[in-house]
Amino acid sequence: MAKRTDASAGTPATLALTRAGVAFTAHAYAHDPRATEFGLEAAEKLGLDPARVFKTLLANVDGHLAVGIVPVTQFLNLKALAHALGAKRAEMADPAVAERKTGYVVGGISPIGQKTALPTVLDESAILAESIFVSGGRRGLDLELAPDDLIAVTGGRYAPIARAR
Image 1 (cartoon, rainbow, N blue to C red):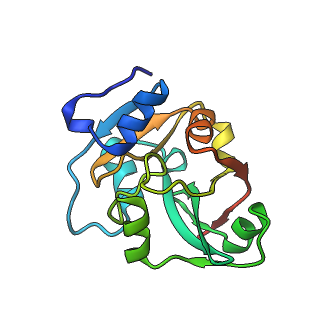
Image 2: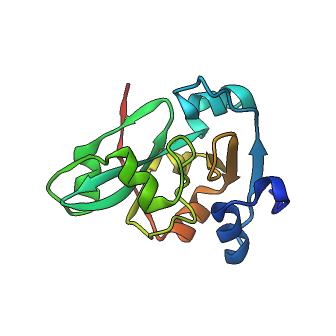
């Protein structure tokens, strides 16, 4: 994968990856404003196996925000996320709070380059892929990178946090 930092991909996420020296590839696609399943839309428009496309979700874990990253074909297991972070309970964060704390809009929230660094957990299924795709910081932009690089740049960890739909 080559670094890509052209103007079409200039988001806080791509800038953070570039600053960190992390190799990534930006993949832009025409976002349909009627789409509600943003990750599945990305997989379809980019012709990708949906198991390699991950969505970024924010949860309130024992009163503090945290990031859970799971394949778009699955749901976030809130109990597992809480357990991975040594907490007792978790619930999905209010979308307005998620947007305010990350600096991104829902459907374009990237786990990289957020306004506030948050504890981050990537589902362990990502380990099986050479590269995965996450939101690039806006709807219609996904970033391809190695899962270990995502862990390194976010200060995150792997854990089994996904559950079947």
